[in-house]
Image 1 (cartoon, rainbow, N blue to C red):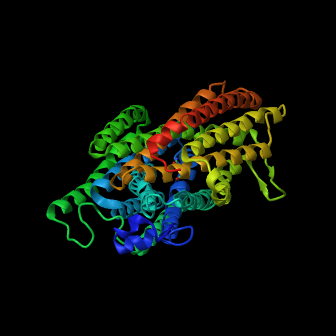
Image 2: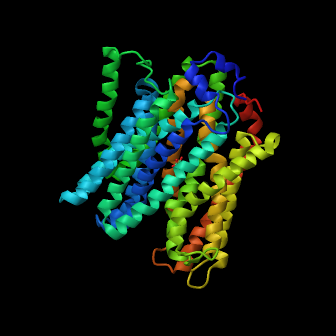
Image 3: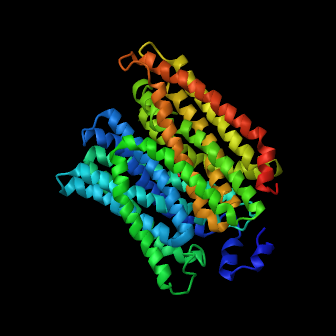
Length: 510
Ligand code: GLN
């Protein structure tokens, strides 16, 4: 698999050295793992405190805070398309990651500073969040793109690499989610946001100090490595930096007026797709077919995230109002909401390597990417069937089983692992390298729509009377979860049914 690879001969020797690595993972992956871990610490740390902070500190009404939260999430993932696009065309991955990371540092400290030194913390909260949204757009898709660049085209170890990277994502998510909320609640919200800022600083420093190990990878397409930027190139690069700063007030406006979110979401997706097709004009027929396969994955992933992201909305409410506290496997006492907010990440960290081993152990019987996607949906359906069963375990006061709730998260996480890291890996296998940023941006844009739809679905399930007793409210949600289970299974079956066709488009060698 390593030195015999025919592509190696034509490569820059440093690139050949990176891609002809021995063992399971390229060395550089560990640095990317760490940088992304800190970025996700910052991201999930801020995300974890957003709604509570808006309600408790900014004294916003709960429904406004929820809408606001949904809008922020949708904008974050929408900006990844912009960040991915400019990485391909102008900045390259290295500059994009550095710039995005820096903006995220500034964004977090702006919110923290507002709380410490200003008497208008709400204004600085929105400003800081908007800066972080733009920063995430430049960081998030592009660091995943670099992971894809570490592999030769046919290298079978790519999925395992993204599996490890995904553990890093969730390690950061678990630590940030836990620490920032704990700091915020016990020592003051400014420390939640400040710790997110310090974490992001660590991410930028790790990336900056280790970028040299990437050899010739990730430079701006306008300034090939070792050359001096022409004035035209310099202007374009400067233009992207300035343009992204100028976009902050626009995001600020959109975020603070969540009624504009709908219109924004209706416009951005179609525009992104039109551009995607336009960009395909320079592709060969095979490249176009592979990109169409990537699009199938992207479209399906919208539905996956729409169901999955109930965790930030309706499942959080069920966890708070209906799930009993208790100790799991004889451990410490935990509440439903603690399980809701941390179980998924912990399960990913634990099961991601195991699933990687399982795929390797299955050798030739390892399911192909399309079937894995289908399995992801089937597990998702199974998870919602388990969430549905919570009603059967409820007592008259509407309290239900912590263990069953946790088990449902376990099943959902297995589904996520069949789809999310595999999807990242597939994007970098299916797109030509010059379009890595764009395709990653599109992949995450699907998450933006997933987030958006998740809110719509959650609101639909919540339409029972606000003052209804907890048992009746639980019934409303669990009925909805049964519907989601059915739709998820349908998606899975369709995906598996169309797998021969999609694999033809993928030109999958397996
Ligand atoms: N939890 C993963 C991450 O943060 C996947 C997010 C997504 O694609 N919606 O990267």
